[in-house]
Each structure stands twice: as C-alpha cells, then as structure tokens.
Length: 238
Image 1: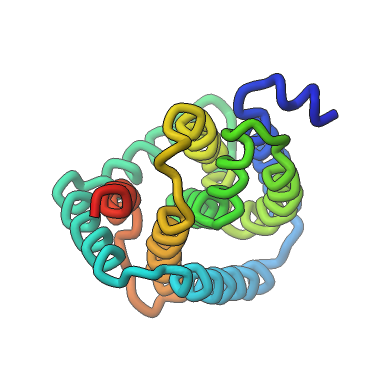
Image 2: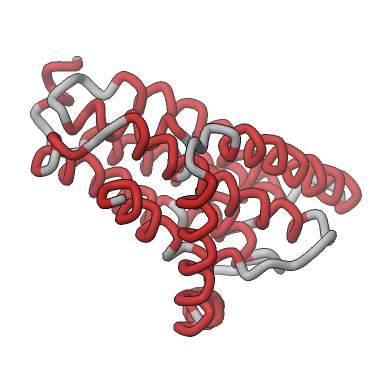
C-alpha cells in the first residue's frame, strides 16, 4: 500500500483533504438532528479545546523575539490588505451562489468554521512533520494517521460550525502539499527550529481564534496569516 501511495506526489495531503470532505459531509447531515442547546455546548467545548491546543503549540517556540515580530508584522500586513474582510466577502458570495443553485446550507458560522478548521488542521506539528516526512521520500505514515484524526474532528466541527469546515480542505491541500513539494527542492534548509517556530506562531493564531469563539475578545485572526511567512523568513535568515 505504501509503495502505491509513494508513487503519487503529495498523496498523503490528498488523502487528508478527502478525509475532511467526507467528515464534513457527515457532520452537515448529522447537524440537522442536533438540538440547538447541544450545538451551543459543543461550540463552547471546541473553543476550549482550541485554547488548550494553542497554548501547547505556543510553548514549542524557542525564540520569543521571532515569534513576536512575526505575529506583529503579519497582523499589520494582513490588516492593511484587509484579508479577513476579503475572505468573508468571498465565502459569503460563494454561499449565496450555492444557495441560488439549490444548496441550502452554510449556517451563521461560515467564516468561523473555515478559520477554525484551517488553523486546527494545518497548524499542528503533525501537518508540518507529516508533509516533511513525505517530502523527503518516506511513506506518509504521519499524514495517514492525521487523516483519520481529521476525519473524526471534521465531523464534530461541521456539525457545529457548518460548511466552512468542508472548504478548509482546499487550503489544507495547498498548504501540506506545498510543504511536501517544497521539501523536495529545499531539503537542506529545513531544521527543527523552523518547525518549532512555525508551530508556535500557529499556536498564537489558535489562541486568538479560541478567544473569539468563546466571545471573550474578537480577533481578526485571518489578518494574522501573513505571520507564517514572516516566521519562515526570520527563522531562515536570522
């Protein structure tokens, strides 16, 4: 089985994306049978889980200065480009088109669902390490395990946050697949420090998202996405 999968570029990421699509579809079907009060409780639990995961990931960072500069500059660039507003308009437009064509779903948490799933599925160390593992020519064992985990998680997320979770499969495929293909070209530049710094910055973004989901403080988390580009650059050249 591994030999067959290894012959397909970024096969682990493809399987991971398909698992999220399948899990999200199941979650959307189940959602119609869940009482609203149960949905609200599940929403709060997801926020607490993301808060805990964000703390764990942030603690992996070794260089506070790089983390701070990356998030600060990333947030400024993202705010200047109005990334979250563009994302909201794009997803809402897509939702409107799908409803007009007869697809009656979307929910009130479309953007939250997309952001939550994107950060949860893409920012963990398994996503990075698994993509690297496949990129250096090994069987994608980590990504196959992650696919099973994401299948279960996407069912829970989609049943609570709606169809935005399904759409997160697209950036996941681009993100993990890009790391895998990039590793083939830049294998000599990858280090454990780079992985730790990316994971830590991803954890900070998860913390901001969890506070928004728990209605403690709203952060425009998607505007902070450029932080990931800055942390890579700082980790490589500082």
